[in-house]
Image 1 (cartoon, rainbow, N blue to C red):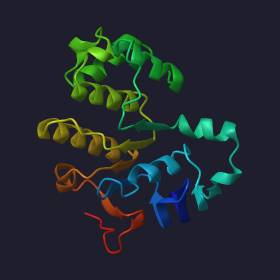
Image 2 (cartoon, rainbow, N blue to C red; image 1 turned 180 degrees about the vertical axis):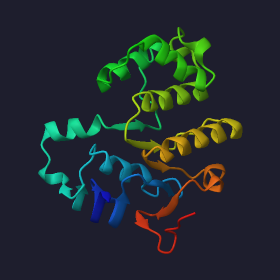
Image 3 (cartoon, rainbow, N blue to C red; image 1 turned 30 degrees about the vertical axis):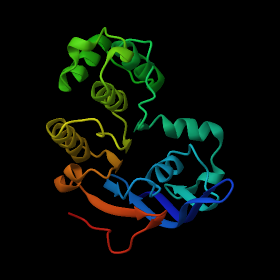
Length: 225
């Protein structure tokens, strides 16, 4: 079943920067999609269009057959609640503690948890960060902040995960752990869209790989492993 479908999608930023050009792409429900390509290829822009943070200049995007252009603001907010997203710049609350950041994420997701404190600490433990729970985010290293950004996306157990270069500041061992965790979520039915140019991730072959270059999909790189 098609979850997302892009038809002839282009994105041009003023005055004349073409970020994406005539993208045709179908992402199935429950798929693990790796989006790769060099820096500046358009990966982040494509994710923003799927997440409905940006609108295409040309073309149409469909969510389960419904055009984004037909979705109301209320529909988009409801749709975003089903998505866990990891940004390159983390978008964490730097003056709140690690625990408070995750508490806010749970509150916004409206996920019902019987023992919130235990649940949050359990996720922190999976990433070896339970001892950092009371630390302010701004006191953490870049790699630790990146892991908190990941936990914030994962903690609400969304049916869709969108991850934009989620392992840029992490060591190979941590990357391996995260990929194995994502594989486990994928087996449970989570749709995962992950952008990366990290060869460590690509070598793990977690799913279908597509490549962007200069805003266009590179033909014959659509591979299932």
